[in-house]
Length: 468
Ligand code: FAD
Ligand code: NAD
Image (tube, rainbow, N blue to C red; front, side, top):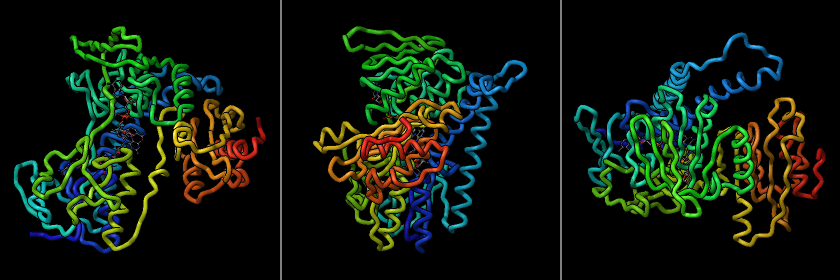
């Protein structure tokens, strides 16, 4: 029987990064993945394929809507070849997942294909597709088994017309009318893909605003821009039934007044969140305890109640984000090596890859108000930037929230072109506990979208933005 210093169960961004860091720190490491490709949700059916489709559909809508104003004339009709677009997405996924195999080889990590389940706290059975099983011994185990899409109790996902994000990445046709249940990250990103490709899209959201966890000003601006793109919204609607009738899907929901509203489309994307995935792990055999909502309970060191078993990523509490899972993978590896790493969860940024993109780090205005922290706010609109006018991406703004007395940056909230990349400046500033004035005194290249960060910082410090 092979024995290891560490076995990692699950090869998503949490698991594979944990394995690499363990190997870098000199531990003999194994990774167990039930699927034949490594990379987990993120690389196979999450971050990477969704961004590939967002990019392809962005090119398409630019060609259809914006080329002309730039003086680019395309002879003949611009058409979509959906099969080719989905095929390209798959080749991006294939290249990326193969990259993980390369990294496993490079770091001398043993890869086992099969379902990992605990025999006891130090032995793991790996059951392959053909039913054959082998057992490995591990001094320490890191559980990184991720999450699966959630649904509502009355919905029967047929995975053809009533679908989750996984099927939405593989459609064979552009829907005529896609009903999207949930105005969160998945609903808006994938909704926008199909809107650009020509579908009518209606987002049905339970709360009174989309992206409800983010700063209210971002929700408002994104709603405004998406409405301009003709996405329809039914906010404060409680979905109560979803039924397939032939090639149609009928969704019934109660609005704020309690009236029943019926929506009819040909596809329904259910995007109401994801839940921790622990099926098949046989946690009882190791004595690992769960907390509410099926997640694995961990302490501040991401250690379960069983001292040699840790858990990271979507399977534990916190934001379900690839970069959060990665930080946790690194943290556990370093703890096992005797180091004292730390994660500041307040500084994990959140991004929505619609266009305009939405990005944020730190506290929202709502959170600051709720906790009674006195703050000041500086905001700068993208439309006042030369760079935005040059590219035509004039929607959005950057908002910086700073402590009223000390000027320390407490939150950075952005919507606009390339803010998914710009948010790194906010994270860096906050990591070094910068004041808004610190940011405002740093030179920002001209013309860039990043100038909006400097201007918002000027506005927050002394209400003296230069270009507005
Ligand atoms: P996962 O990536 O879910 O990986 C878990 C792995 O464990 C899987 O491969 C699974 O097969 C394997 N596994 C499970 N049980 C066993 C077992 N018993 N034995 C062996 N293997 C097992 N996040 C972002 O930060 N940015 C984005 O842009 C983004 N876009 C997304 C788009 C979509 C459509 C979706 C669905 C998610 C997106 N996410 C994004 C979220 C991101 O994918 C997850 O937060 C991230 O993948 C979590 O990583 P993880 O390592 O915890 O788990
Ligand atoms: P989410 O939590 O972002 O959004 C779910 C939405 O559904 C919420 O707005 C919620 O109010 C709404 N909702 C819940 N129940 C409902 C009901 N009964 N009727 C109508 N609306 C309802 O979840 P998601 O969009 O499914 O994404 C799942 C996870 O994947 C998220 O945690 C997210 O962090 C991650 N993800 C991240 C990215 C990214 O980082 N860009 C992209 C995709 C997914």
